[in-house]
Image 1: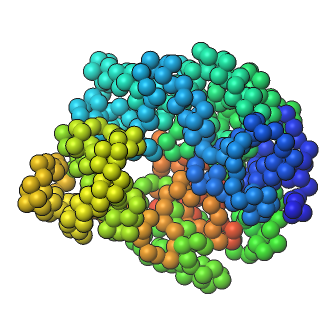
Image 2: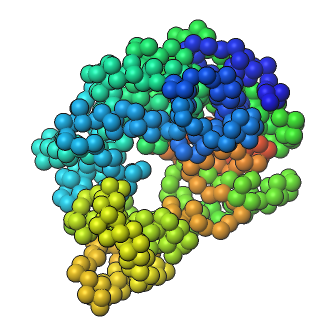
Image 3: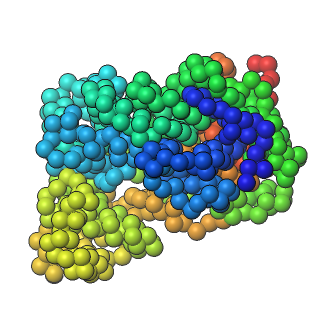
Length: 566
């Protein structure tokens, strides 16, 4: 069962105990290690009401752990009671915030999670509409998740601040809010932390470099209240969590403080040439050792190339290079990834929507839900489309900012399951196809609503009249596009492996230009932009090509990656 573990992995799976950090390089098989340690613990588990909690940061990540557990080690198909496997957010929600949130929020009932990833939030008024873009720092002060969409000096705007506080008091919270309030709950009620530490005496955290300051504080509070078996697994060089304030330095602190910690520096993914090429960007003491027999001696030399304005041709040339080197281009084997989101518009030829030209009106907050739902439905995501329109209908009928699952359940009880779902389905079928402009679709939809004597209309801002649905929902559009390679942001492929990767960079991400960061020799620990680039560079097994827009950037990247003197 455990024969394929290396000596270092075997040490982690069988010999380590207490509190320790596994500092894992890219492609080191850390998920395999987590699955193996989990399998080993469960095989010997005899307690009926205490279990092991294993958490990661995305559904894809924890499902991959479960896949390793069931397929590689064949202990069972699913992780079941008394154990827990899921995201760190779902763990916090299930065991702290949802059952005990009323103690802090002072709301009458169990709190409700709103905003992404739980659903679209749209406020009735401008101050309400900003609710899901505001959350709490560890000290309780407010901050904007995306500062660019906030008014100037918004912290001094009493209406915005009051709206945030009042909606929270009403029992509503975003996921970021939930993490903050969960921390406050177990600070105020340590008996809850003690109960969780008894319920889950073992805690394993995968991708621990993505832990925020608040999440790490929750872990520390559990440790203070009796938790003493903690395994944190991660790579500080890969801390790039897109919608969270990841603090990789906190993992480094734990690595240094916990004497039982270990480094896992064997790459089961990449060739030695790729390991050597990316090493100088990392904080590793020495290059990772390529140990996969199939790829370790692959001879394609990673390189930095220039691109002009013709990005489609760049992609075509890269696919040809892959095929020339024996890599057949498929969505599973080849990735074209980018740092700056507007590069997707240049690659696909779909025009970008200007930043301050949103078509969506806050006074008709359900219009976007109807449009997105029908677009998803038209393009084969029947479940996602149905759910979006179902919620849109209830938002409109109830004049709601957010439609929760409880709202849907209430309507099902009122009308009956079959009748309600049938009515939603008939409504979806009556809507026009989304292969037109948004303005035309709105006009056609409103005519249908009038003809059917339905007493509401959809409305958008004038700026959005000529937008296409592919423009509006480009992220969703890319998920259903049919091409022979994977196209997405670096964030979207984190944790994944491809045979070949083309990483397209501009002159800068957010903040300083790449050439400045590289010339000033800023460490990867102090630059999220370098960490994002590093994650992109460490996806491939065989072929790595980095494309940059000018010679100055090419020279800067080559100097860094080849460790040349400046």
